Amino acid sequence: MTFEDTKEGLKNYLLQALNMVLDAAETSYTNSFDISISPNGFYWLPRLPSSFIINFELYERIFEIANIALYPRYTLLKQNGMYIVPLDSNDIHVQRALFFPWMPGIPERLTIPNLNFEANKNHTFPLMKNLNLDYDSVTSIAIAGTSGSGKSYFLNYLLSAIHYFSKLTVIDPKMDQPARWARDNNVEVIYPDASRSKADFVNEINEVLANALHMINDRQRRLYVNPQLQFDHYTIAIDEVLALGEGIPKSIKNAFDSLISQIALLGRATKVHLLLVSQRFDFNTLPPSVREQANVLIQLGHINSKTTQFLFPDIDPKGIVIPLGKGTGLIQIIDSEHPAQVLPFLAPTYSLSKGDKNE
Image 1 (cartoon, rainbow, N blue to C red):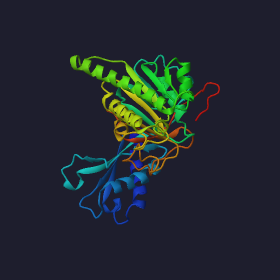
Image 2 (image 1 turned 135 degrees about the horizontal axis):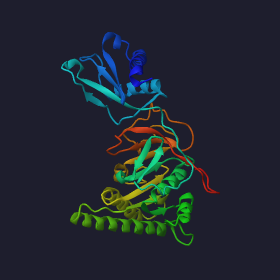
Image 3 (image 1 turned 60 degrees about the vertical axis):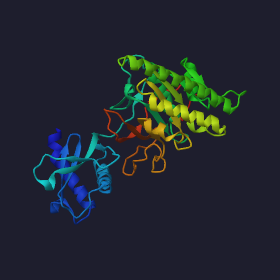
Image 4 (image 1 turned 180 degrees about the vertical axis):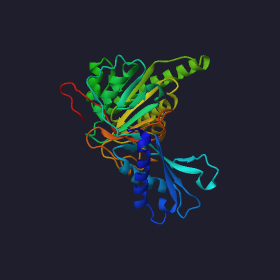
């Protein structure tokens, strides 16, 4: 059956779902609104003037109703704000619509037989079925989630995909899965030494960040002379960022915040990236500018307005259908290919080395 065959039935189904829940005084039966279906989503067409206010609250209400009604045939894509579009009409009463973009089906988890990405030469790798990440468009990546949500497990996946085309430095305060991955793959790794203080450890991290900033400045000068230059990717991956700022002198913490902010702000054009993992990202964990510059945001574990307020301050997760299980949550990729929409996320599964756990 083609899309056109189901278009009218889908329209009538959505109209019925909305008529039953929205204000009974304003329905499609009284010509207050209509629905139009497209391959990429549906349009809610109000007839103005109306007795109801068309605002983000109404947009969110329609989203909540339609998202559940369409599941699992379609997944509506959560928006930061009201998505209003002009219509090609000479009638001023119906010259605008609220648009609700969707993707066919529901997000599906990938099962990776092995983590050999050596054949991948275009800097693109999969995150879910029908969702790929182009690393050339990445500024920084931020991953949040409580213990046991699958952060470190997913970080190992990202490191395995990235290290074939990017120089890597891994920083692991717990000396856990990421440190073992780096050791096994001959990647530079920094972890605490029993004979040194935590302040010394963070100072060592600051030296790595300072060297990255020098690299950025050098590459910027070279780009100024020749804008066509292409550089190799360099990524600094930091696990458990939250643990770094606790119990160290303020001067060292301020130096860390300053360095990581400058890298986040200046690194994109010079292909220097941050890959940051933490139980949470708040004002005590990272400067707001770092979070704002990250264009790949992932929240794993329990999803509610409290857990998402740091990575997704403009998004209310209400109405989004979140799958159950480890390594699930929300993802937002902000680039030219992916509008600033939020999707349910299921991290890929793969075989772990002996002794590692899916945490």
